[in-house]
Length: 118
Image 1: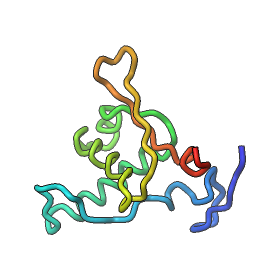
Image 2: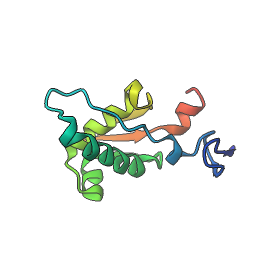
Image 3: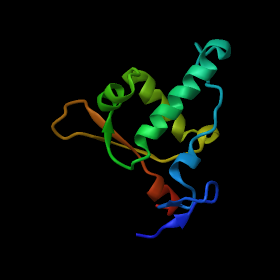
Image 4: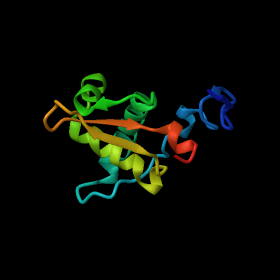
């Protein structure tokens, strides 16, 4: 596996920029119920928690992430969708249904594939 020296922090990483350094920028949300004075800091902190939980390039269910982070599954799902938006970095978030999981899906932030153009 190829290693790079992070262009931001100088640490060795599997991508040209260390995953923690690729974290989406803070930003406002688009929802009808979003109120910046109440939600801006709360949702950006939540975004950082979700980011740190999924930068491992492993598959995670919303339930697993909710148990780990203490955030509701619906909020985690929204942050994963945010990662795909241009203003939050246009990151690649893969999803697939668990074969024997009924309606359960797993999600993976694919920093390696995204950096190599896959």
